[in-house]
Length: 267
Image (cartoon, rainbow, N blue to C red; front, side, top):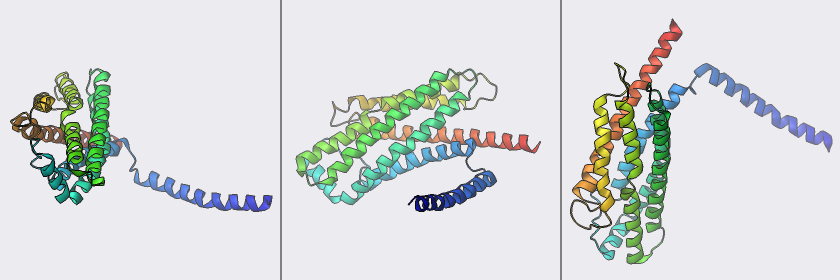
């Protein structure tokens, strides 16, 4: 019995040893798992985050958004007609909750690279993104539940309202993250700032548009409803513009860092 066990243990260790040697050679040869590549992947996850979120809204038939003034029967009929799209959209939104975490991490990293910036700005930005991730998890849960069973018009209406409230009303994490970015940009005293100072203006203004979502529980019509010109359309455009420009700027900075590293290695 002892001989059999030792033989089986040796037989298991040999494939693991071979696998370990192959992985070591691959890691040493291709040098893929570097800090720069991780930052680029985190930026890519940010682009995927906003792209998948937009596609999820289209799949659900939520562009334009369902009017909050709709009754239970109209909302129920919409969810019934778009059942497959909403099921796909719920999965896409929960994926977004994961993708926004590497995005938040690379934002925090880039803020820490700015000279004389208080490290608490990077910490606060990362925490805000973590909270935002939870809100996307919650909204995807309500959206998935709405098509999980035939709950009837009234409960479907309730789940739909919960989805819109958790998606739109929970804007403060984005406000905190955007203003920490703006503060860090304006505190950069170097002659060649990492972020254009004009980008601080967009990071300051975008949350002001999102703040109109604070009153969606008071309005079913008009610009302050969740489908309104201020609460949805203006906020929607500014949010995607702000995140997109921040990502493009960070990608430029990371690629510049990689070029400098390569130049130092060749010299």
